[in-house]
Structures are given as structure tokens and as C-alpha cells.
Image 1 (tube, rainbow, N blue to C red):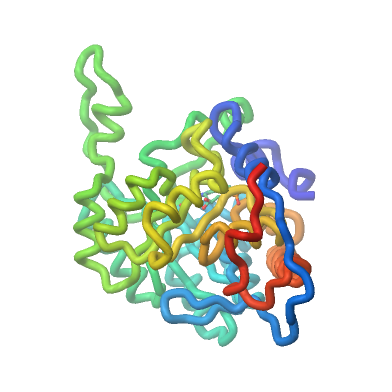
Image 2: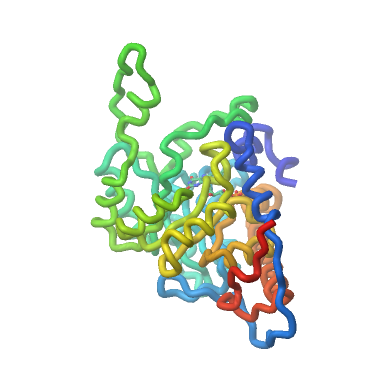
Length: 349
Ligand code: FNR
């Protein structure tokens, strides 16, 4: 339905991945490869999907992932998604590259009483003072955590977008309106425009240390796949990790998140909150993610497609479907609460 609503360029941007889209496909296939081993005759009365996260009780463990430029899907863009999330008690992560001002989204959503958490996704900018200002704006507007995405130092090789002729004017990123222009650097003769110029100011672990020391908000690192990076981030003092490969949009052939998650749980142990996204399409996928050790999951394309197809009602509907499916999957696996959802539910084939 979304594809029928959208022009071919918007569809390529929202639906596509990098390169041959192997990671895009494998994210879904990896959840499919896992099989459930349900338990019987356990008491189910009084069951629920509530989850504790950063000192809050969520009605259910489903959040909307940061997705840039949502006006490509619907004229109301991020405001529509945020309202739907609030109505369904889902957490919302607003992208740095939102097409709506971060203050406007917070103002609309924060008064909602049964809403989920409201987080801001940060891309480090080449100008540190500007990055600091962006963080300050998010804090002042009432965002409750920062999600720092670090798996996209540059955009992936987006063949599908190139073929479709996707062009995204930088003016769409309204929250970066006052970002000073990046001083151009000339690549050395025979050098690389990517490394010598564009990535000259790419963020490093030092930037993460700087940010940890400067915000009072819990900070989650998004895009973690390697267990050693997970350990290093934990040592740097992050409050949580999001196991993610950017929905297969950055490094094609990167490991599927369902395959990465158990390795990261083993590396950092059970205490650091881990979230996961990529290819989650069914309540059974949510159940599997939680069984492998995730505290919560994020969805990207399912809700932007719903936004394109049916606006805010579509987004609310997708969240409700996933939550209903999660409840059904829990009940049929013998899990009354999420505390009953453990790795023993999963068989790897
Ligand atoms: C994204 N994603 C993303 N991530 C991020 O940290 N900042 C961003 O601005 C964006 N923008 C974005 C645009 C579009 C169109 C998509 C589809 C995705 C990645 C997103 O947060 C999430 O990691 C994936 O979408 C999860 O995979 P699924 O659920 O789409 O398979």
C-alpha cells in the first residue's frame, strides 16, 4: 500500500538498503532462522508486556526507531508518528535529520500521559559547538535520552537510490538549519575525497567521551555489532546499546542483528540494557529478540510504510498489531511476563 502511495524516489529511499541489500534481507531471514520452543501449562492469568527501562515502566517494549525525513512518507511527517506512538504507549526516537523541529515534536507529545519514552537521536556534526547546542536543545525540550548513531560515518553505497534518482536537499533537515558550512578541504593529489575531505571530522571514541561528560541524559550507542565495540562503549559509560546495522542501509553484508545480539549479550553481560532493531516485523520477532537478551526493540520501515499508507492511524495500527502479536506469542510460549522470556525459548537451526 505504501509503494502505491509514494513516488518511485521516496519508495527507493524508505524501502531500500545499501549495495545488493544482502544485510537488508538477512535482517529478516535471521529472525526467521530462529525457532521457538514453547512451554506448556504455565499459569498465564494477569500476564502483561510491561518492561522496566531507565527507571520507567513501559506498557510494552516496542519503540519507533529514528527515521529521517518523514515528510517523504506523509505531509505530517514526524508529528504524525509521534502522536501515534504516544497514543499506543510506544517510545519514540526522533532523528537528527527529522523534517520537523525537535521542539515542536516534544511540545506535542510530552503532555500525553500514557506515552512511551521520548528520545533524541544524535548524529555528531562536524562543528562541536553546534553538536553541543543540539544536545542542549534536546535537553531543554524535554527529551529523556540521547541515542548516538555511529554506524553511518558516511552514507552506504545506495545503488537503489541512485537508480531511482533520489536527491535529498539539505534544507529538509530543519534541526540543522544553523549548522555552519563545513570548511572544504582539498584532497591531496591522488588522495581520497571521502577520507581527506568528507570524513576529516568523522566522530571517534574521543567524541563519545566528550559527550558522556557533557550531558545529563542517559546515552545509548546505536549501531553496535562487534562485541569489542560493545565492551568499549560500556567502559566509556554509556547507559545502553542499540544493536543495529541501520536497517541494512550502511555497510552491506554486515552481520544480521539477530546474529549479532547473542554475541553482544555474552560480551557485556545482563546488566547493561541492550535494544535491537532490523527486520522486526512480527510479534514472534519481538519475542525472539527479548529471549536473546534485548530489553526492547525498535522498528523502522514497518511504521514509515504505515505512515505512507494510512497516516497516523496506520502507525498506531502497526504498533497495536505488533503488541497484540507479542501477547499471543507470549501466551502460546508459556510466558506470563517478559521476565519469563528467556533464551531457553530459542532453538538455533
Ligand atoms: C533509518 N535509520 C536511521 N537511523 C538513525 O539513527 N538516524 C536516521 O536518521 C535514520 N534514518 C533512516 C531512514 C530510513 C528511511 C530508514 C528505513 C532507516 C535506521 C533506523 O533507525 C533503524 O535502525 C532501521 O530502520 C531498523 O530496521 P527496520 O525495522 O527498518 O528493518
